[in-house]
Image (cartoon, rainbow, N blue to C red; front, side):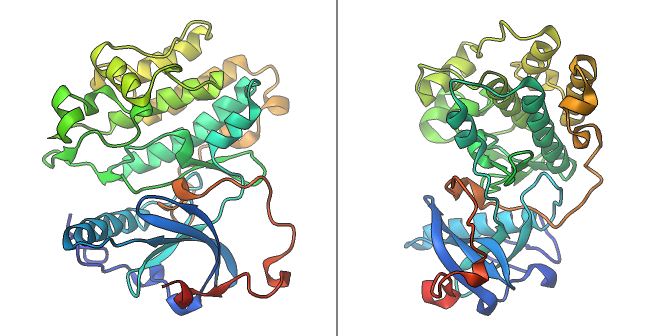
Length: 350
């Protein structure tokens, strides 16, 4: 995947100048999340509150090479795609450490939002509104030839007013290729498409061909979860859920869903990837559902839902957010007025 202003190999980092972060202008605040390969901090960059992802390179030459390759791919994709339903990418740098800077969303993950509502659920029009946000983000990614491969509620962040959802975390995203072999068993088992599995794959991480329709399957599971506010494949472990979906064609129950909603969900999780709709079709089906089922469009549904937002390009997206822990509320004191010492110079964290 050669590109003059992004990268030409796993170890080469040629980010376009406008996305290059000056680490001297970064100030790191409290840690807000941690994953296997990175830590995320609240911070400041050019007086803006941001999320700062510091990537751990690893200890062995093999780990370092793998981490650098993943980092370069992620940054290249973040700088490539721009959409209001993708978390906004601000910039990155590779030295003195690998850093990705994105907007900081304080509404928390969709996972926490749903769990906190239980046993209650979302109103249907709200669930479909969130689903449209997700579908529009995915349509944008796919239009750029990018497969997300890890679509799940933990990677969906809410705005502070809890009215809109943004897709995040490009750590597993890859550019789709007709010839390249991609690693199967990628993503999170409960939301993963059946074609990502084989008995060999589950044991050995076999590489195999698949396409962007893996994201349509994951979307169906997320949509089911939005409608029911229950964990899909409840009562099964992650591996049991994956096995049941891949080898027994088991799906969460669509009984009780309105016929047109059931059709959307079941079409997206069909066993044959080629039979699943693309995200442009999914968006149209969701809009059609709303147009027929909203009791009062103006009263119940925000106007933004009915306007196409894929033509709106705002500065891009990140791989930061799956690591960000949810916080119940936004800080009430402006950052510049908080007690000294909240933000320290970036270099103190290196």
